[in-house]
Length: 112
Image (cartoon, rainbow, N blue to C red; front, side, top):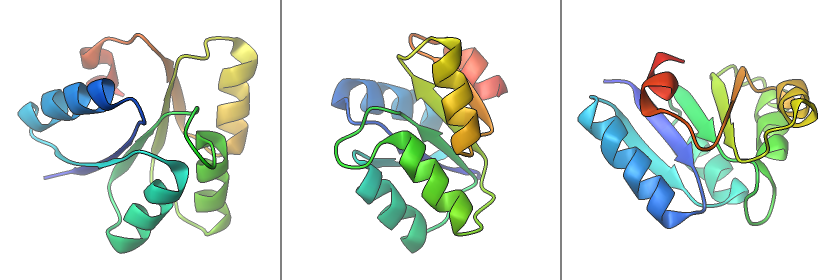
């Protein structure tokens, strides 16, 4: 079973997405801040990270930068309300593999 680290500080969104991912056969861990995401990944690496940008403490871009600087090659999909091309470029430059904007279709997230 693939393990997903879902990094999202909006509880209703995190729980809803985690519920749907679990129903699709994934093991899901939730982190609500950038620091918590880095700690969770250090404790138990995952197969993919779904990463919000606007987080308490360090933001999602910085989480991606730190993971890449540490040599971690886990796929990172940024899921953000920021929908400008410049935002997506910043996320990809930070080390994300893909960028999707909120609101999103669950099937699209699963396909990515």
